[in-house]
Length: 123
Image 1 (cartoon, rainbow, N blue to C red):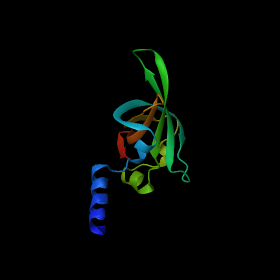
Image 2: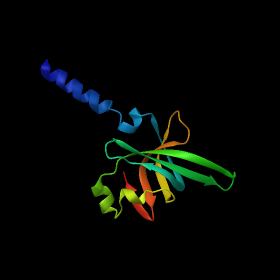
Image 3: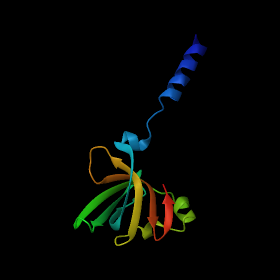
Image 4: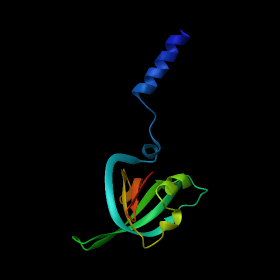
């Protein structure tokens, strides 16, 4: 009985895996990319996530849009491997962000990849 119950529990986890962190936080599977200029960076080491505010200019619509970028705090080793530091994510820096759009909040993205100064950082 215990063995069959254990097998059943394992099969349930295989069929229905636990949602990832971004899904639990309300982000979809729809991947989006934005390019713009960092206006604010909040990457305190005492938080689980860091936040960027990115200004995206649309030449076609003549509109400026502010995006909130949520990202896991990059470990020093990830940044060092990319040859970067958190200080390089300062206001005025051009950035390209690829990640997942929020389900309910517009202009909100959960970052998977940042490109800063031609350096790619996978989060």
